[in-house]
Image 1 (cartoon, rainbow, N blue to C red):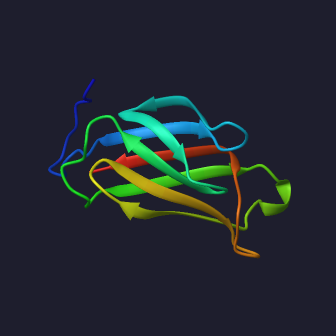
Image 2: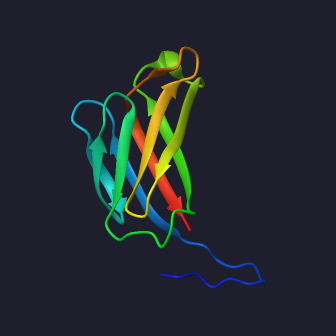
Length: 111
């Protein structure tokens, strides 16, 4: 449902989103326009879109909860490779640059 807005600024919607677990067997908890998650190794994932993006000029917002409390506040999460059908993301402990699997990973794509 599209909300009523006022003003002249355009309304941009989330084009894809997913909440998934990154530890053990990777599994989607909930999602929109995400067909699957590919586990590419520790801390490395590919989010696959159900319907492709129009181009690769989208923005990716990421959030995660580390499996280890020792990494709280010291983690780096980012999108690394953008395509119209998927985005690759990673989760790194900023203190030692080691890849980590987070308990919860959340991704939102805007275009």
